[in-house]
Amino acid sequence: MVSCITMRDYHLHTPFCKHAKGTMEEYIEVALQKGISEVCFTDHMPFPNEFDAEHRMSMQDIENYVEKINLMKRKYREVSVLIGIEVDYVEGYENFIEKLLDSYPFDLAVMSVHFMPKWPKGQWVFEYEYTRQTLRKQCRDYFNVLVKGIKTGLFDVVGHFDVIKRPGHSVLDTNAAEVFRVLESIRKANMSIELNTSGLRKEVKETYPSLDIIELAVNRDIPIVLASDAHQPENVGYAFDDLFNILFQLPKLKMARYSRRRYVTSVMEQPDNEVDWSE
Image: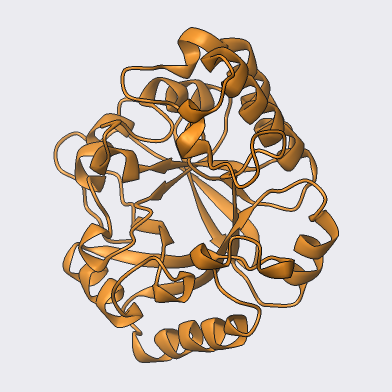
């Protein structure tokens, strides 16, 4: 039996977050060229006191951001365009996050962790090798914060699950217990997990999370969303075709579709030959 599925890219950035290139139109045009029928823009949520202001929207940007996406919805009838946002989970900002998410018609809130509160001030997880902690301890700190964020109930999708890993390092080798704990928290929270292909474009040369963790998630009935984490138009849908060939090997795979912060899951069936991407 041939599966009828739709490719969706649920993690796209634009210049609103100050570190991406290209217009929304350019991202959508690439999506159309690649047969992607639904996209979700997910620029970074602003925080009070200009926290990490150089990597995220300002409070004044959000109205324009939402209106621009609504304009894309009206302009491109042949593709579904969603209003999303990527939210750093930082302890102490829960009330602020909840209020902002409730103030706009978001379709999707992606939770990410880029900063560790107990690490040196301004410390990005990407730079963890500059701390004086052991790798195992650093990963444990990171996964503990992921669990805290998940338990807030504020988010829909866990973004780049194992972004803390470095080349040649599997978090399952050093922190399997923490990985299992995070996955169980995601399952209990009825959240999904993104298969983020940006790592394939970086030194780590691996998806976030690694495919063995994706398999663990699928076996726990955790839905998956595909995410290019594109910061320029040509990265939309990056490596999606190759990943579908792998994902179809997972009999329990479910892909999630979102609208107004609610998801619908669809069971993926193994195709006999090629895949019909139309619905």
